[in-house]
Structure formats: C-alpha cells, structure tokens
Image (cartoon, rainbow, N blue to C red; front, side, top):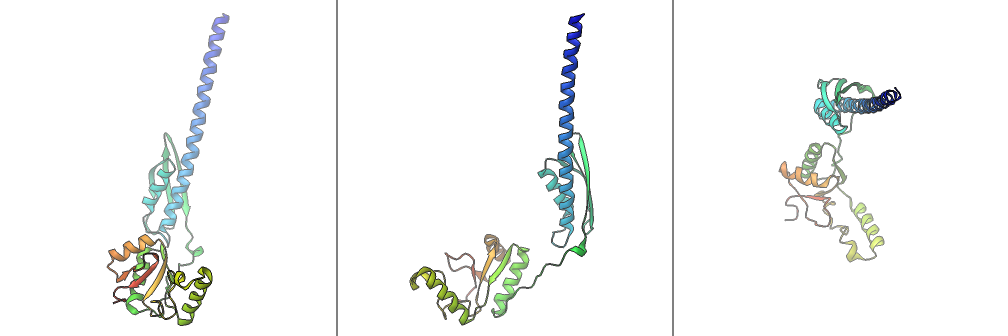
Amino acid sequence: MSMVVVALSLLLSMAAGVFTVDLGRIAWDRGRAQTAADAAALAAAAESGPYGHDQPSEQARIFAEANGARLVDCLCERGATAMQVKVSVGATSAEARAVLDPSLLRPASTAVDVGGLDPRLAEAVRRLLEAAHGDVRLVSGYRSAGEQAALWEQALNRYGSAEVADNWVAPPGASMHERGLAVDLGGDLPLAGSRAARLHLPLWRPLANEPWHFELVGSRG
C-alpha cells in the first residue's frame, strides 16, 4: 500500500511540476504577445500620422515580428487616427488599440533657408532635402564676407597655422559659400550623395576631406 502511495505522490508531484511549467510558459507568451500588440498598434498609428509614410499595416507587421510575434489582423486603414491589431505568440494571442490625436501634433517645418544661394543650387538643395524625408538637413549655405572671416579666424586660433586652417576653412574671399555656390549638409551624408545622384541633381563633392560640402556642378569651371 505504501508503495502505491509513494508512486501516486511522485506522479502528482511530476504533474504539478509540468502544470507549473505550462502556466509559466503561458504567462510568458501572454506577456510577449501583449507587448508585441502594443508596439504594433503604436507603430501603425505613428505611421498613419503626418510624419509617417502611410504604410500602417506594414509597420505593424514589422514591430510585431521584432517582438517575437506574428501579426494576425490589423484594422489599419491608411489615414485613420485609430489602429487596432491582433498578434499571436505560439497558441496565445493579444489585441491592442492605439489612437492618434492630430491636434497634439504640430506640423513639421519644411522651410529651408536658401537665401543668397544661386537659384540652381537652391532648387537642387530643396529637392534633395524633400527626397531625404528629414534624414538630411542644411547646416550652412550662403555666407557673407564677414561670416567667412569670422570662421577663418576661429580656424586660425584652433590650428595655429594658416596652412593647416586652409585645409578646413577657406580664407575670406576664397569660399564658394560667399558666392552662393556651396552648402554644408548634415545628417545622413551617404543618403545625401545617393539621392543627389538618383535625382540627377547638379551637386557634387569636390573636397575629399569634407564629405558634407556640396557645390553646384560646374561652379569651379
């Protein structure tokens, strides 16, 4: 009799252990699924906003998978302010809803100060920045003689030599910025170069040590 009791106790103990493991796994999957659902819904809402690219369902899928889940359903109409998604992790599923309030968002400024630039360069810069969707920005455009002189003095003080300073800043009267034929860009510079080439913009980078410096094609001819 005691042998039977021991055997039953052992089986019950093993069953309880398996049950505990299963409960733990279910709880873990449920937490992962909810996290993924929340992320997917928020991503879809943001993508439908003024700064997105109008692909809410695709963004929901990307964020669901990035969190270890599969996107099951997405009520993600383009341009809508509310997004609802359902994801699954194993046998567990979760849903989430995200609502975008447009009144809380201020429109991004698309103004670019290209004053003083050659009209051909100004138009090329505008087109490049528009195509880069905010990943490239204008850092410096036209400079007056006084502004160039101030930059030159700073370079002299920093490097202590006109010869070395000239590697980074042109002396007053010698800068293409003063003629409105050059700009310095910031952000994703490889993207700036590739977009300029793809759009056949009249921009080139003549200075190997300054990848941010773009000039109007033919300006040095």
